[in-house]
Length: 231
Image 1 (cartoon, rainbow, N blue to C red):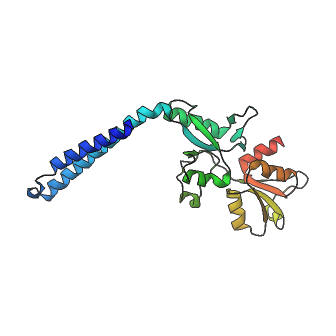
Image 2: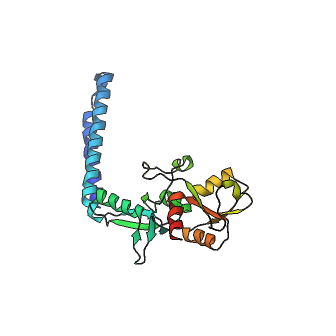
Image 3: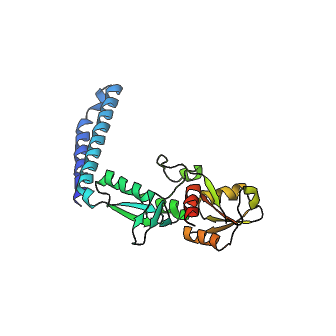
């Protein structure tokens, strides 16, 4: 309420100032009139910035950033045995909180899946996504991306006893993917003859491969490298 009152007072003062300055415009030149209008805009912007800064300083100690992360995608975002969020994306999230709010603990981690990352941003459930969010033209139409902080490609992991070394070997076979990922988009568009088994969670996806429900699994190459090393 105090912040709202402050904004109203500042805008009211500006409105009074504008009304006083706007009298007698008929006798002035068109150029002078527009210059005065430009000066008012500058005053308005300064007052608005001043208001925002006051609100920011007042509320900074109470703010938290809501960051969407994965809970089952090591080494990027996962929950450890103690129930703590860990991983590469978690480290970046803490750096953001430290830079913006002065405390790396001022974060509310919100676990999500690949398929609902865009939805969570558009519905204001999170402020930022740090969850292996690959930049695509389709996604850029709906959300804003920062500059990339990691470069990855698609990779395929398969059983040792039946290795897949060429995408042509997947023709007529089942390929396991996560819903809403670039792997799903890529194979749907470019290889319609490959049957896709789709799952929401990474845990479900990799368990499907271990259970031999598909010939291989497609995901970010850094993720499949990390998983294959442990399995």
